[in-house]
Length: 139
Image 1 (cartoon, rainbow, N blue to C red):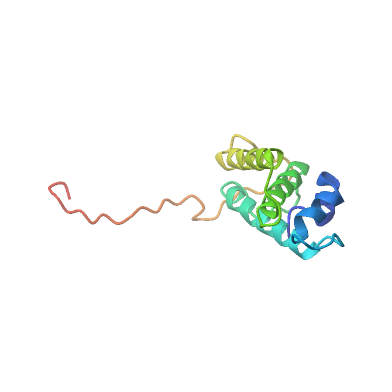
Image 2: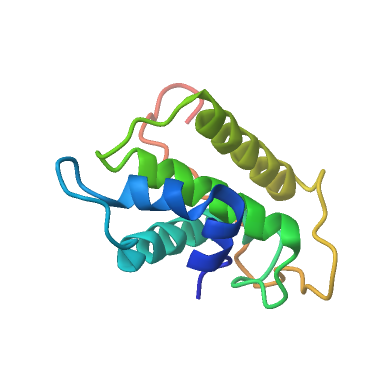
């Protein structure tokens, strides 16, 4: 389940914008391609989980408002870059801000509020290095 909904996208960015980014060039505007928006939200959620699972068990059960905003920003950028519309400066800046926030959560400098369980699995922080192939004078 995505951290945001199609309705969240329309509330933040307007129905007209979502319609524009989901309508192929040359076609008349009709209805929002909800499947395309949902796919972008699912992709954004997967991307977010990649950062979040460093500190928290995913999927996060109680989604803070900031996570909804970040999910929408990532999905909006991905929709723009899907080939129908080129992401403008405002969209790109929001995408960069969302990624910066996720890096902060992953690093531990930003803490998600709420009843979230830390990721305590046995291998969440394992380091896996490359095997040493060099057997020189120190090996």
